[in-house]
Length: 467
Image (cartoon, rainbow, N blue to C red; front, side, top):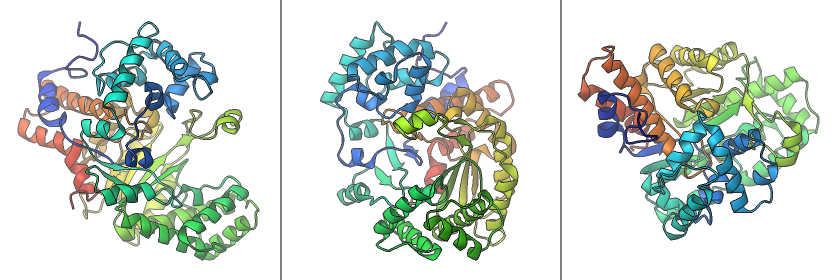
């Protein structure tokens, strides 16, 4: 019986161990999609307690605690830091076989060097030890540097002033921190009042008024240019599905005018407007040579009661079962037909869609860029051992695993970087097992290069971070 989380964790044979330790383990990290705070990086935040860095904003842990019968007071409420941590520690043993159990103990091991299993009886010991280290040496930047993070792309609204990105770049901070452009608020409209309030904010950021569709496009282009001036190379969309209805600009302008007047258009008219806007944003990305990312399939804010109480992104989202294929094909074909399809990464949230997304990416590769259309890493609820293996296998079967741009954290926590190590171990074990079973040749030079590329070099080249 092997010890829990030992040196060879998730590595089941000699080839897997060789690939991981010789080619994967020490590669730098390019975290090209995350939700980390640029403010915390710029100010080199020092967290007072393990609760602050671990439970503040982490809806993965909140969901587990609620499922374990923990009152909301200890998740997002006014309980003390230690009371919240204690409730999390009591929950951890019940998370066995959930990825949280692995992630929790991997994050204790690194950076804290704590190998004790977290539970109710060890909570105080672990809390005190981690807090002592947070006070003495672990700030945001020292954690990032310890994890060998080289590049971070945060996720930012077009109306953001990006002041902290500017501060970091003026300073010349050695870890590159770039913004990524997420303009979903001009595409997904749930009510006209919120939409109009947002347009006023966007107009202020762009130093112009927005009263027409042309004004909106002008403001977005202005902000797109501003993001590019600070090194932005990626956009991102978090959508239920693709919007690809037929439209004319005049029709879209009419729908926009109705929204701007404070009225919600009919569903069919909204789809027309959404299809127009998503297409326009994709054209902007193509013009600049950016990569566009599409995170598709979340059914969000399922509990209206908790949405009203806590707001979005607090742990009440789930997989959706939307139909994606036809709209996705129409959306990309419309761009491809005019040779204006940017580099693209597709992420699905329901594993039933793995092969659909993997094969859709293959439809629009055109030989211009290796891996131009990417089937992205296992996302959110699929970001665990089984989900990663299924994503890697679907990509391997339907495309070119060797051109994959690899892992990202998609996280709000600075302690989440062991997820890259988790991915690298899983990747090396899958390849090593194929060699062990005689399904791949034992060509260690090529396999080692392939692993290095997936873990680091493919992303560096694909996103242009080597320029």
